[in-house]
Length: 124
Image 1 (cartoon, rainbow, N blue to C red):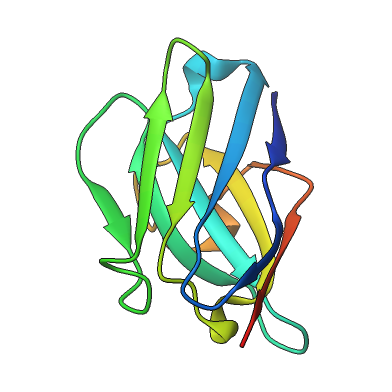
Image 2: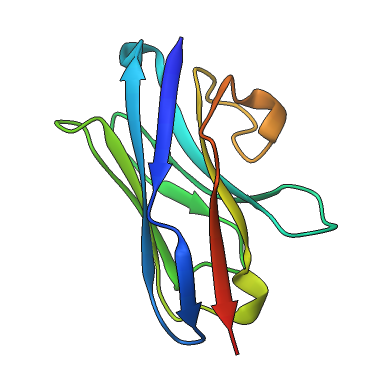
């Protein structure tokens, strides 16, 4: 079992930046990918991006590519989502998640462990 604890959400003006953290504990050796998802009010949960926990390329949804960067620090067992040039449409609850799978990493159903979620609000 992997436990994920998120931090770093908040309120920011459009054009600003935030960094979310996701601290992992438990069976960390079972993590293959760490993904980030978001859910806005009245909308379905959306894939934001994912990173291979052992290194390698990251994947992003088109709407955040070039603005968001996913990274991880294996020594700290922590993943990060750096969000720059934020827009009001980025407002959502953001979740980190972990999976043993390497397939369909953009699908929430593939992820076994989830963080508690953190609110990101971007004002115009």
